[in-house]
Image 1 (cartoon, one colour):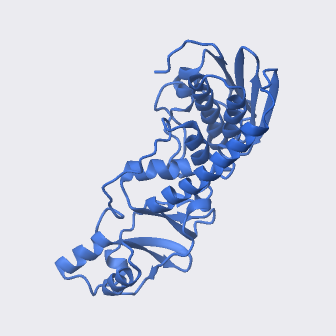
Image 2 (cartoon, helix red, strand yellow; image 1 turned 60 degrees about the vertical axis):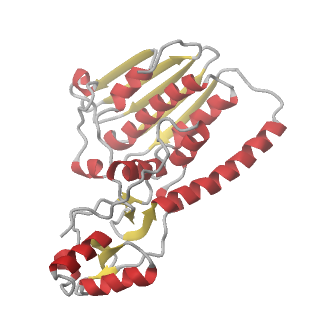
Image 3 (cartoon, helix red, strand yellow; image 1 turned 45 degrees about the vertical axis):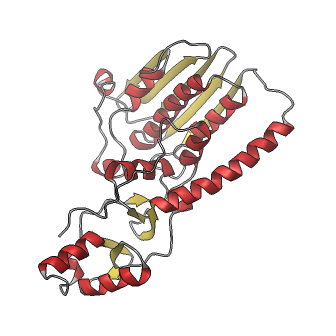
Length: 316
């Protein structure tokens, strides 16, 4: 049985960190369900590997999920078929030779996570599950690139229209506040995307916007993953931007430890979704000119990041 899903040689040539701001906005704004293919060709238990070979050839695909009802139980890739042919297993039932340890995406994840998965694992496609762990789609690198090109074209037209209609840029103080629910990955990244747009409209240095975007995104994801839900506030002043994340629990037992890179309390479910790397607070502190955190177990946590608009701090 193969231990990979389906290998491809080329990464998606898009970075979730260093791409142009318009691309970054799109990959955090779009959800996987906006991009995935919903018409999925599948196999079922009991079918011989030879049937999957014919299925892939007829439909010109290089991998097929194996399902039981709507539940994903495995995946057969072209590598699995080649191995079965070489070793004489081609007439065995698929459940005996399929890949069971399948890496999946969830449909309400931001597209940025899919791009990270493609570049990390070098797989050609990923099955997509919904909140009920049912197979609802499949995502290939071609799906990602095609959708981004279409969205970028629409975004360029929107920006051109906005530029023509603009009569001036406001530099006055303003507040933006967002409710961030626990485990709501469908909304994850929306607040930080809105904040970035507001900063771009004020024509702030892109390097400063990048630092603020990192802080706001990391704090927003921390609220989604680690808290019971909370709020994210952005205060834009003429000389600085203040990002404040506040929640009512569960709190951090050891703040110094939580600030260490790689330390995380994320559970297995969160880690399976690609979160919980233990870099959120560390990254936020790194990009901030001023950083404040206060937390108590059972009470909650408040984190404040301040970035000065004319700051000369280098991001490392």
